[in-house]
Amino acid sequence: MALLKKRPELRLLAPPEVRPGQEFVVEIIVRAERPVPIDSLDVQFEGEERVTIGAGKHARTARKRWVALHAQLSKARRMVGEQRFKVRLRVPEGVPPSYVGCQARVEYLLKIRASIPWWPDARASFVIPVVQPPAEGEETPFVFSSDPSGPAAGEPHVEASLANTNLRPGGMLHGAVALSNVATSRYFGLQVHLRGRQVANVRGSRNASWCFEYTLNLPDKDIREGAPAQYSMRIPEVQPTVRGEHFALSWVVEVRARRRLARDVVIRAPVVMLPRDPTAQARARKRAVPPTVGSPRVNAVWKRVAAEVGLALEGDTLAGNIGHVRLVVRRDARGAEGNYLLGTLTFPSVQLGLDAGPLGGFARYVSLSERLEWPDKHHYFVGRDLEQVKAFATNLLPHGFAHEIVDASDELLVVQQKGSGQTQTELRRFVRNMNQVAHGFAKALAQVPAPSQFTGPSVQAWRRIAEGLVGELELTRMAVTGSFDGRRASVCTHWTNRGPWQTEVSLQPLQPINERLALKWSAADGPLPETGLRSDARAALSAVSKGTLGCSIAPRLLSVSLPAPLMEAEPALDTLRGLAQLELALQRRSAYR
Image 1 (cartoon, rainbow, N blue to C red):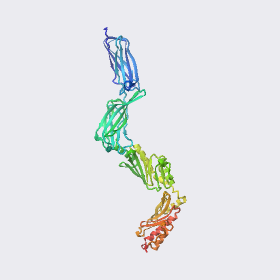
Image 2: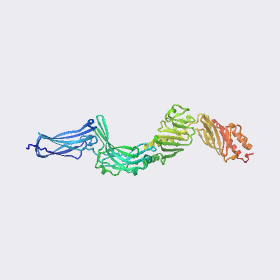
Image 3: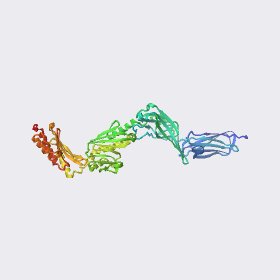
Image 4: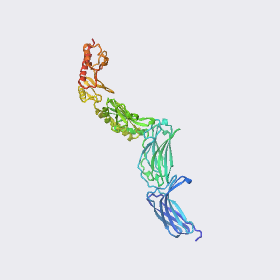
């Protein structure tokens, strides 16, 4: 045997990659050109995570041993020529895959050692790639933006979408992006970034770094107001999403709208980077299409909601009629205040002297009149008669109504909600609630009682007036419109803030009265003035105006004002008879002397 020993050559035959939980077989080849004694031939399979934060004397390192397997392939013997040894190994379940990042590394090594007596040992280390098993990811489209409530007036706004948030190395990233307020935001470029962020934790110290970044520049011609620009990007061979003992790697898709002399607008969407699967591309049947963004997406949302509730889409407004109520929903951009959904109900006057709105600040604690706090303590309703207002408001709006009451009157109700209907869920909820209020208007109005100044017998008297005029009684204002002796007639209470002011009884003549006979008289002005009427017409006028507050003769209307509140039916019906007699007298050719 030669005095100088020659160490044997160590080689390894192993699978190109293995997976956690998998058993695998490796073959170790020992080739000795000259005979050499060995004490033992050992193999060791090790897997270690190593994370370092900082540098120099400030460096902190943490380790985690994931695998430590040892086997002795041969005891003391004399090696010569080529000899092969097979060993079966297993990667434990749940270990992280091989990884090389900014400050973190996960490495699996197969170490071989031939121990040679009285001579340096023969050693060799081989990397065993451990990869995650292929994982199926469902197609999950995603839409994200710089402001979910939509573009504010004059402010930059970016909205983007991804066809799928489950990505795979070697696959494609498909998406779309749209910009708003192009005229005022001075955009000059669009970029799409695929970025990997590693977060490391070592003994209480935390460090986050963007370790991987791949960029796609979009053409400037794609920058148009609200118009979606689609893009596609080949995903390079990157590390999949992974988590170890002391680190984690996550991925995002970042869309950056570059601006001149202003801060760029940047939005990000988290994505999952799945392990590479060579068969995934072959299984792909069609190209994924990203959800539309910008103006087309919002218009589609509003069109779907309009169809659901039976409204019409008119530009950026939803509108429709529900009975006698007109419902309009629109977007309202208020600059620094943000965006709002504004719902407006217009309807025939309820004649309640209604006023409503938000109740805040000093007004919450001080009130000059009685009020109803409804539908919550942050809003108020007031009107001529609080009991009438209470019946109308509580039947029109449920307690705890989800939206803010901006304003209300006898013909109008305005409601708002923060946001601009960018999502179907947000818009559907607001429109359906407004639609429900509109449908409940007639029922709420029917629940309004007579004004508190009118007792039970007086209400019955007014019902007799309604029968006499073949009309319906409006309890809200105590008024009847119908016909009397073939003529259109009405008996109506006029109100002030203090209560009923007068009762007007009016009759429309079958033929217009001569304009020269026009007259307007008030009892406050003194006795009925002398007129050029013949005696029969003057007698009819004196009879109908006796004991009244005033009267009026116009070509198309005869009216008399009675005191209010009117508690009996006979004065109104007698006045209507008197007005009919007055009309006949005025229509005679000889009405003048």
